Image 1 (tube, rainbow, N blue to C red):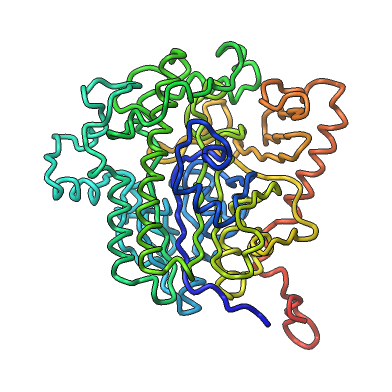
Image 2 (cartoon, rainbow, N blue to C red; image 1 turned 60 degrees about the vertical axis):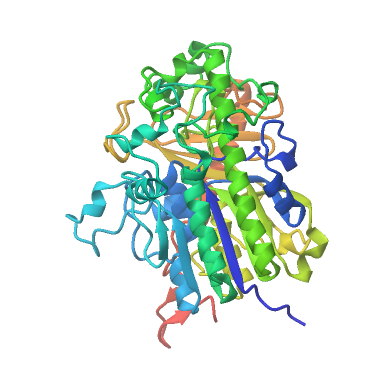
Length: 515
């Protein structure tokens, strides 16, 4: 007897959350009791990787099931080709309402939206097809600021100054944010989610995309979460002995170390992140985990409401992040390049059906990817997965099965050109279309192929912290050649195949997938 498909889905997407940062995985600074209870009732995918960075490429992969090389949203602000199948459109085609709280960082195809449209002056709009319950505008944040004012908190002349610490001094700080936790952007997402759930929306067949902005910068967190994480729980960053030694690894790393500014992480702070003292980095890391604790608390409120209403009994719950955060590792902050910290993200899936009972509380060590999420949601809802998807459904893992022939590596991509708000070619002297890199990362090696720059190879058995690039070492010449071949074969296998299954014949058009 075939089990009934899932009725509804709660798809929780946080922003810039590192993959190791869950209490259930033993992380000392990650205070995540609510996600831990979700994990104990579901499955944790320990080695889950985003397909790209920053937000636009990563989210496009999650919501199309396509690798970056196929959807081609290579950086923030690049339009998503309107021809691609997307999660909200597939849901609507099946008569399921796709609702959204948060954002998707999608720039619309200018062939269907006028190039003069005001939406092109933003980092991205909502992907077509979602029913917008509440939009968190990542640039103006006007919806959020209006909500703050409605809570009785006066706005400064520049509302962004709300993200200065309580004393108003820019930079890493142990002080709380000016606003109370009840008026934070995390509380904004939770409040809209609770209103949606209390209205009984998940009682019908529906999908709720619930976005939280945190632990994305600016790194400042309201009380009581600002000192929730003990100082002794903060681990030192993984990095070379000096900024100069880190920069010697590759020109891309050297360029980033000389460019990334503190102001992107701490409102109004001058200088470069590479010049932060060890104490400042520890303070920033503690604040980051305070933001995680606050977000976990908000997610707990949502889970509590689902338990109260009974919706949790027939709702698939997925928790993940768009990409990770360097957090001082390799002397960097943000999400960029080829380091695992920028792409390794959490994934927890709770399937309420009896067929998932055998897998509850398990941790999966197979490599999974952001492109697997759209196929998983559609498959669990009993819908057909578009043949164009590069990912695969994770539903067999939820049933306690290890799918035959599952991938043995993770793959992700990055483009060195800058995007929104100031699009420009890479500062490394590369042309507009010359800054691509792609990563093959398995258990033994990590290979980074650059379009125009020298490659990178890490011997993960000897160098798990990825500090020494051995690509130019003659002893690894055969390994570089082997992994370059793997990379080429992977890319050829996943080239766009929208129409390649069709063929003219003497009998007319043949669909080889259905023949």
